[in-house]
Image (cartoon, rainbow, N blue to C red; front, side, top):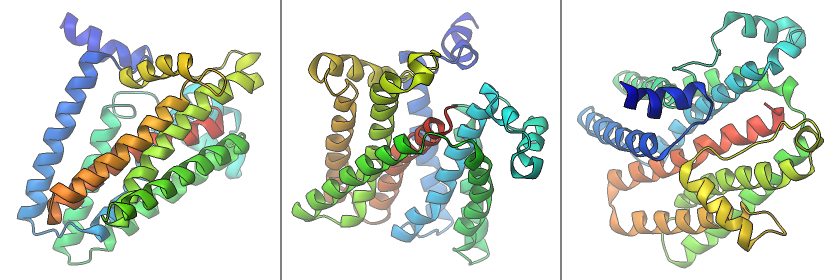
Length: 297
């Protein structure tokens, strides 16, 4: 119990996030869950292709946006804008649905969104209406995004993240075309470019120039073990432009290689399912980070 408390419970409530132990355990659980879901989807005769991958993206956006709302609620940003959207933000805050807790932060929110996505796909498949699942995901995501709009202040930083992500995604597109694999897998590169760019802009640029950090000490840090190590190394290599530029660059390189290897070595539905997993691992934290940055939560 002491071991579980130290490595799994305390990091949640101390807001420290990750350590080597829970990182490995969460990773193994995620892979096991993905494998089980893949087998069930195959048994249910759900066709896993490019359309299937795209149909899951609204749920990824939903989970990341919900996580950003939790950040905003936890810091009191939503309470400070209670009257926004005709008082809707105040009602959301008072509902306590988005209070910081086991089901609203990692790993709980991944479980909640994963199960919601999984059962939505199964129901849509049983009804023989495959577009029902992404439509349901979009219907849930759009209101959550609207909740955050009144809180968005740092549009310049958000735009910079998107520019870097699109440059990275475009570079990935041309690289994958050059090595003669499907351009569709450049979505993997874009997803990880977004994650890397959001981390780079937030820690290396926002922290350095934004008065909220330099004067009021509301600064951001990296919670993931490997990413933090890369950032520390980058501080010695890319000090003038910010240490986390190395993280952004590594994200681009490894995501492009991962997409290429998957396209070359995997076949059919298995290939597209792996592509989906690669997209999730980049897009989920990337969207959460850019939204949290733009709201200053």
